[in-house]
Image (tube, rainbow, N blue to C red):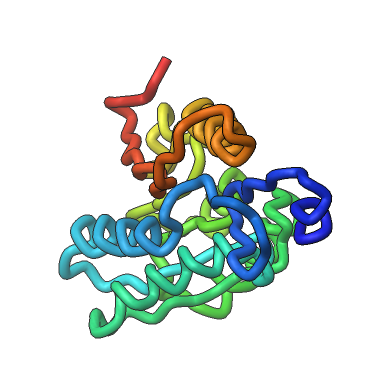
Length: 201
């Protein structure tokens, strides 16, 4: 990134930031805030029901996923709920299902999921294979799989950001950097809380 910027190429990071670099801006949601939002929804929906929580990440090295996890764990502190982590699946269904099955077998009290990194179809399949109920399932990104899972009532909610709006903002920031537009500060993209009842067309 620094070499590109030194060569006159403006760089905008997207989804996962590289703040120590010479990039001109980051475009994407406030990942820490997304994790806190997920924890808020989880606490509200679980209420007093006893349940530990599974958190799934695709890779521990992704900064954005790490920030979501930190926000979630911080907001869940003091609830008395155990958080069980599954990572290094790369968000792939085949790997994720195996890892989730292992975690569920080791932790029979897990009855809720915060999916930071994808593989949600596989996570649900693992619960179903063991005949386990997932009371609350908070996911990220309104992709094809998550839209269908939400319509079918198999996940509770999706935390989403508008990719087209992100792309417009990224282009604006690059044009600003080149002096083609007046400078405006970049702000984190708002988190959309999508339920089966406000699914965009």
